[in-house]
Image (cartoon, rainbow, N blue to C red; front, top):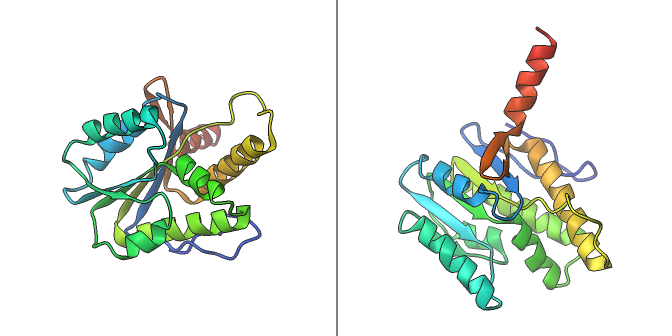
Length: 201
């Protein structure tokens, strides 16, 4: 099944096999999004890959990583891939499900390498495309960073805008988009479909 380009001015870059499904799971900090993603992945077969994009820059981030590792226990194989996700995945076997956590750190890692927006977009396109050739179900966790005030510096504004635009355009091709808030998970596309059906009833 061919899907549109992630961005209107790009050629089509994602091609989803008929049996493939991509879910985007977003929300604020401590919203329950990662827990939901792990629980969903556990229902998708026994051969599971967790792709970690985080880098342990300091003790606080090390503790966050440790807590997430405890949450996953031994239920996943883990691939640490802060950069070059498509290259790492090409070396992997086939899985029942791939969980990528998270898009936001993935973007920030690429920004820290001083890559421009077009290159970052291309790398994320390639990473998602490759993931969908390696598993029939791909779960992508992200963070909603656009609900707060406008950041006071150019780099933070660039990060916010790039993250928001990527979330919008990945959501456009995802089978389902889940929004986590206060531990409650809302299936956004399903809710839109139900609203549209009610309007036409």
